[in-house]
Image (cartoon, rainbow, N blue to C red; front, side):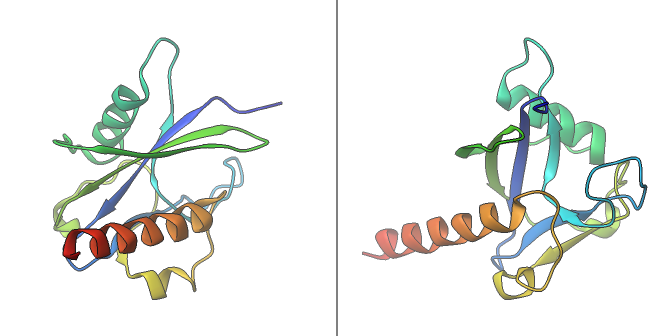
Length: 139
């Protein structure tokens, strides 16, 4: 059976590090004790953008300002809609309601992590997208 569609966000800081959450270490959840993007399931009659904004408030009491759509993925088990934004957060000041902890990681550090779902592939494509857009803007 396919899962409900999800919305996730890539939060990147000014040092080009991505904010990830270490999932709870509970056998009752998929991919326990692995790293993931922040986000969750889209509720019935909820837009993708409304879902990611709601999830971030629920998970870390953070109201997102400007967010950009990155890409939709259509996996065998679910559809995932990925947004992104640049934010320099002081993660020591964030109250995390889901997951064990938050941490920022560079592109190189990400390669060493164990990920939930397809997040490693999504992040690799996102970093390629960023590099290509940086080249274009520097022209």
